[in-house]
Amino acid sequence: MNLERDDNIPFAPTIEELKNRFICHRCVGEKYLSAEIKRDGHRHRCSYCGHRPAAYSVGEMAQRIGAVFDEHYVRTSDQPNDWQRSLQSDDESDYEWERDGEPVIRAIANAAEIPEEAASDIQDVLEYENADFDHDRLGEETEFSSDSRYNQKNVTDDSWRAEWDAFEHSLKTDARFFSRKAQTLLASVFNGMDRMSTAVLW
Image 1 (cartoon, rainbow, N blue to C red):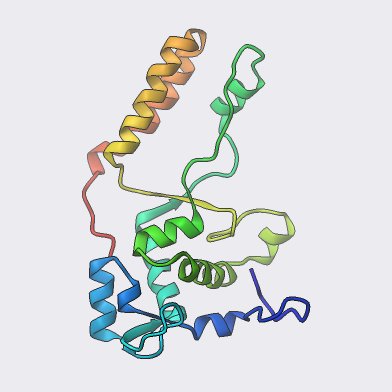
Image 2: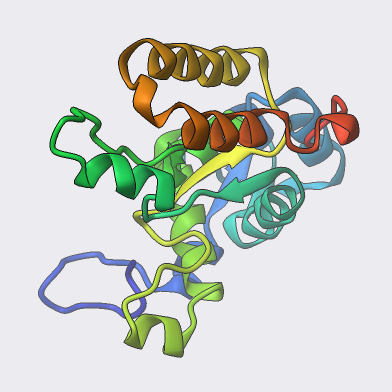
């Protein structure tokens, strides 16, 4: 994240410069958000396509994206849980932990359907605004950190299938872990099922 201008890196923008860039409604593929920008935005030269239709500043977009992520997304853990650690430490298991979720820039780009360059600028702004000195000092990840990953809170059919396939595989290959793994996986898959609903992000 570029917090200040670095003389050794030409044209490295400051956070304020990033906030003052603009993205037009034509560069936003998400229909609801694009229509909102077209209705409520003002004409500016888009920093990503060069045209001058209605646009939001990157600062405004960061606020909009931040609000949507607060409500509809969750940052995944950057560490394996106890069950995953137990598999990692078992000499007979070939389990390799991989963090769940989409990389933050891709998650932003996919949520708003915007160019990756714009998503990267928005991520820089959000990372700066969510930075915490104590967390940074301890090397702990904060919201929208460059290495963070996110999942949507609402479970999709694909994620259900992935969870079930992993569970089925575990039954076939790691039977002696059945009780602990069954409890963990089923709790993860079915937790909050009674509260599930289809939601519009924007």
